[in-house]
Each structure stands twice: as structure tokens, then as C-alpha cells.
Length: 309
Length: 100
Ligand code: SF4
Ligand code: SF4
Image 1 (spheres, rainbow over the protein chains, first blue to last red):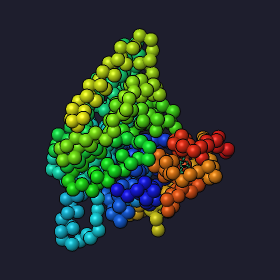
Image 2 (image 1 turned 30 degrees about the horizontal axis):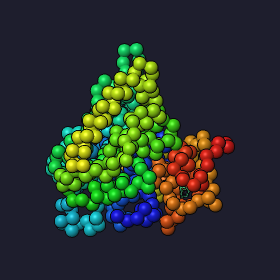
Image 3 (image 1 turned 90 degrees about the vertical axis):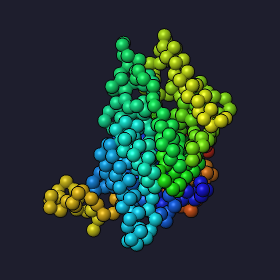
Image 4 (image 1 turned 135 degrees about the vertical axis):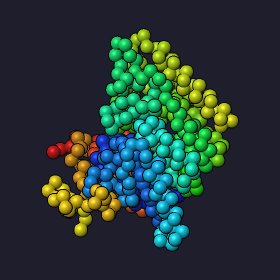
């Protein structure tokens, strides 16, 4: 991988002037994934419906320097499969010479839920593309409705906290694990840490591994999670240090843990800065936090077994 | 001619591009989001160690990097979120109230 200074000196492929919220994590994810592209390579980007789609390309203003295809909610995986197949044919006929890389972006709504079947199809057919999910754990674009990526007990507009509800009643599903079960050559899970070397190296592997690859990037949303906007790096760090959001990759079926905290912090450290979990800290709700902690522990133990740690 | 020169609120429908396509990239660069700011970052160049830790965290690509060194902020696009100021380990970015 190129070193950090080289990567950050590369020309921007996602320009400023887009209309994502100040401090948006989804934009940080997309911008840094694109940093992993070699400057001489071109990209074709498909975007499932979501904040990123509607706010980075407001006709005629596009923040994308590369070719970009608007999609419906459910078909980013299918659209990009088609584009990649067309490219292969044109390349074979000698009509295209330069190298193009195929990247889909979707939020958790467009990936875990609505776009899931077209994503699963693209993975199973093993198209040479990468699908990047920027996971902010709810349908933020339409007003913070719960998705299957929303964590247990989160306060959303469709799981509102009140006298009869303590937030989302169900747990969240593990999409990286589900995609790994498609037996694709590469799956990575990451978020924003330090100098982004974990994210940049996973993005580079995902983009430059032949075949279908998948990246799951936890990308906090200040509006939906209700933490102080400037604290995004702290929130990400706590997600990793509490093992709520472990950093791992699955390379040709082999699970690899990329970071193991020296002391696993209690999950409160991740929950506390976020308004969507405020009710968990009310007197009498201690058992809810204990339950959240138990779920985090169980998944972490399972991951350690997968990674043979 | 760039599409942003003629596609606006006053465009005649006959001049809108078919399929809503545009034939160039990065036109949003011309759009100012700097006027969204409530707070504004100030770059204290003398404290900066050029570690670049502030550069990947910006959602708006508003910290230009040239040959491994960061330059002053791109105030046309910076939305004043304050993430870069928190990310800087050397106190070389301070947030202030924007004066309008
Ligand atoms: S305040 Fe926010 S938008 Fe402005 S340069 Fe810093 S990180 Fe970027
Ligand atoms: S993080 Fe601070 S010290 Fe490092 S390059 Fe940015 S402003 Fe300079």
C-alpha cells in the first residue's frame, strides 16, 4: 500500500460542494475508499438510494469525478454487475483501453435490507466489483427509521422510546458474516481510526482483489445517533475498543482479526455519547445495558473463534 | 460549456440533457457550501507538524494536501463541523464563531 502521505496527496475523487450534513460519516467513508484507487485508474460508481446518493449528485452538480450511476434503492448490485459485464465485453473487443474499477456504495437501508437480494446475486456471480456499505444503522435519509442494521434499544422514529418502548426491540444482523458465507474472495469490516490505515488498506484490497468483494464501514450519523458532531472519531474509537464494532477481514475464507483491544472497555463507553441510547442510562434500566453487553460479548467470542484467536 | 452554466431554475426543458445525464465530473466543486458554517476552523500553521491526521477525517475535502503537506482550509466548502480540530493532536486547529 502507498504510504499515508502519498494517499492523502492523491487528487480528490469526491469533491467538496456536496450537500451532505456537516460532519457526515458516510461522506468520510466514501472519500477515503476512493483514496485507495490508484490515480491512473478510473472508476464506475453505482449508488443505492440514500443520503449519499441524493446529496452528492444534485443535477447538474456532481461531487464525483468518476462515472456515476443513480440507482433505485434495491438494485445497485445488479446495475453494477451489468456495467462490469459490459466493460469486459468492450475491453475484449478493444473498444476500451484504460482500467476501470467498479464500486457500489449503499447505506445500511439499501444494503442490509432493500438492496440485499441484488447484492447477494452480484456476490454469488462473483463479478469483479466491490460493494461498500456505509453503515449508520438506520434509514437516516428519510428521517431515522430503524433498519436491520440498527442496534438493539436504539431510539429511532419507528422504534420511539417512551412509556411502553425501550427502543428497537430486536438485535442487528451481521452483514459481513452473511457476505462471507457467499465465499467471495474478500470481505472487510472497518471504521474510522487514527490515520485510516485500516480503512485504506481494506479498501485497496477490496478494489484490487479480482472478483466480488465487500466492505462494511461503520459510518456514524450525527443527526441519527445524536452525539456532538465533532466527536465522530471518539465514537468510532469506542465502538472498536468495546468490541461493539470489531475490525476484521475474511480473505479467501480465512478469518483474520485486525485489532484486539488490550483491555476491552465496557459498552457504556460507546453508548454514552449517543442521544439514541440516553434512556439506557435512566435509573431502573441497568438490565438493558447488561443485555446489550451480553450480546456484544457473545458476538466477540464468536468472532474470536472464527479467527482462531 | 459546463452543464452548470445552463442547467438551473430557468432552463428550458428542451435544453435539459436526456436522462438527466451530465458529461463531466466534479461539478459540485463549483458549489459553495461554506455559507453553511456556524463555527469556523482556524489553522495555526506555526503549531502544525504536518502529520496530516486532520485530512482524512474531513467529510468535505476542505483540507487540501499538496506534496505531503496540508495547506490552509478551503473555506468555499468547509462546513465548520469541527472534526478536524478534534483530530489534531497538536492544537493547530481551533474552532471559532463564524462572523457573518
Ligand atoms: S471543520 Fe469540518 S468541514 Fe471544515 S475543514 Fe474541518 S473537518 Fe472539514
Ligand atoms: S492534524 Fe494538526 S498537526 Fe497534523 S497536519 Fe493537521 S493541523 Fe497539522
